[in-house]
Image 1 (cartoon, rainbow, N blue to C red):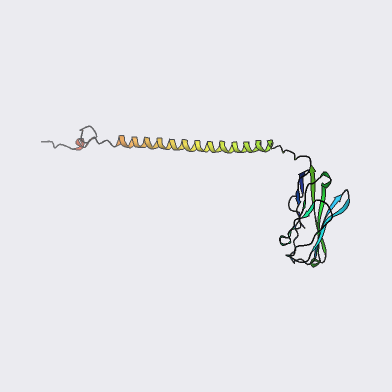
Image 2 (image 1 turned 90 degrees about the horizontal axis):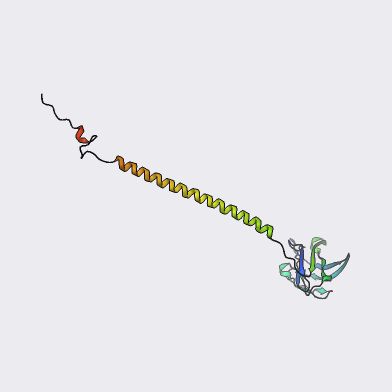
Length: 194
C-alpha cells in the first residue's frame, strides 16, 4: 500500500479532498481485502471496506461514514477515497490497509494525515527570493565581467593589428625612383676612367 510521497495534507474547513492510496503486487491479486480506517484519539473507526476479486474488477465498496466516496479504480490499482465538505472533526490519521491471499495473507498499510485549518497559511518566501536574487546577481556580474574582458581583448587585438599595418606600410616605401639614399640609384657604380 502506498499513499504517495506526500504523507500529509492541509485542507480548508468545508473543502473536498482526496486521500490517495494505491496497491501493488508482483504476483497479482485474488480476493484482495482493503479498508480505510480513521484514528479517532486512539480508536480506529472503519471508513470503508471491500474485496477486489481480481485485477480489472471494480469492487462493491461498503461505506460507513458520511461525506465519503470511493473514487479508486481497480484497473489503476487505485483505492483512494474522497472526503467532501470536511470539518475539523475529519482531521487526523487515515490508514489504508490491504491483505492479499496470493501473498499468504500478508498485511500492508499506509497512513495519511489530514490537517483541517480555517485558512491556508501564507508561506513567507522572502529568504528564497533574497537567495535567488543574490545568485542571479552574481551570475549576471560574472557574465558582465567576461563580456567586458572579451571586448577589451578584441579592441586590443584590433589596435595591435592596425599598428602592424602601419609598420608594414611605412617600411614598404620604395625610394629607388627618388634617388634618395638607400635607393637603387646609389647602388649603381659608375665606371671610372683612367
